Image 1 (cartoon, rainbow, N blue to C red):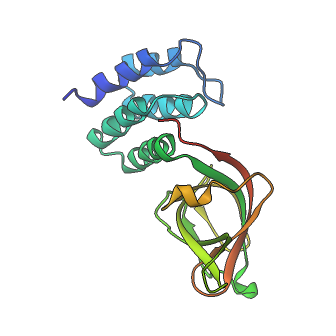
Image 2 (image 1 turned 135 degrees about the horizontal axis):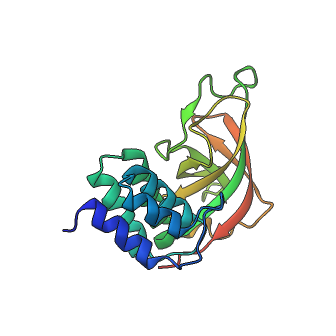
Length: 194
């Protein structure tokens, strides 16, 4: 098994030379961080560049392993999340949580994919009752999401095939018990790439 620093170099070599993150930093910037032994910065930059380009599953697995070896749990989970998306596809949506005064959550939750709420995606059980489905939730660009707040989210359904009927513009509801605690409008449905 290669060490984390070798893995970072391998990822930099696998990315297209002109690849850049949304912030404008490039693979060359990542290589420079590696040479300066700014390992955490290099890892974060490589993840950001990979997020901006369709990359193979093996690259996400390599980034996750490098993060694991560096004991950077958030970066590991982020890389594993993207690897899951390559394998299974993903649903992106704009989620608005109800405020506590509207019957929603009373506190914020961590945005890093650990919450597994139920979702009403339009299905019905054999008896005609509304059916809900489980999907892990990753919130983009923030560390947590609280009552009354809105953010773009990525959903990792427990049974991805049951979500394939969704399309941009569809409205789904988030539940953590009987009443809804949020409403989301689908932005994008990505099929598996693996």
